[in-house]
Length: 436
Image (cartoon, rainbow, N blue to C red):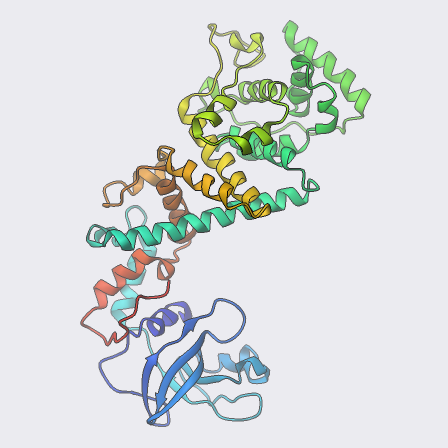
């Protein structure tokens, strides 16, 4: 596997014997170079002595030498700077675009590295790397978590940017759509986002002061007013929606596939839509207020929502329920801060080049309690301190982008595990902190 060969080269896990090119010249790897994840050679600015002569340039790695031709490197001038070609199997000579031969060296992946890597990849529950985490320094864990938090910020910012592009950079609309998605709290997230994108915001704005009309549009656009029911309030909403639909020429939409199985009644889409309608009716400059808020307590006071009186005794249009105010609990408020407010603060801070907003987003995460989900529970007991949402977000990024994708070679914990397993068996001359 070429990816694993990259790892062996990068961390200089070489066999206990002198390295030589296929033509017999002695090779000393002083610096393997900087790993390149974009177009061009695999490692930049490597420092290598070949037969006593110091060369500074790039290195290319392949599983089989003939991949050099297969990938078209022999005709690509970007690869003329390669000073050494490394492959597990040399089946031919290779040349630069001007016909010059390039020195080649055989490097195979040690069997122990391969087997321990497969242990990491095949683990279903608790990966073997868990065993090394308690022995890691606080600095190692902190630096890796900081990098993961930054990655997560960047990913969420890119999602917001794409959403804004489809909305002509209308931040209020983009914020509401993101908020709606997160009101789905996972299981109905996709359905809520699709629904929110179908809301004709400018039409709703004309009736924003009337909660009943906002509800009619919201439930109608959700496809929840299509049934033949006898409930009086339902019939009133249905009639109002048909009027507004005709008035504004709303496009005919397909009813959403709302999921109800295993949902608590308070999480039914009917209740969440009623809360969003109440929220939209109450807060006319929602995004602006969020940007101006300086503490998580202020955010929570903005998000403290309710419903119209009808929903205090209903979870859907079919059945009544004991009278209860349908407000968001503290756990739900924290999730909205983590998944909606924080990413938007950060994205808007980048958009406005306002470091204060970016810093506030980080502070909000650090001041919010860590999430309690299957990922945080999975990592419980490994010795990693998870107290704040910043910690749990780093874990989610680690699980999603590294563990689930089996990218152990790019993970600090995976690296430490393999390092522990291979120390003493092979040359590892590099004393610098590994570049992950």
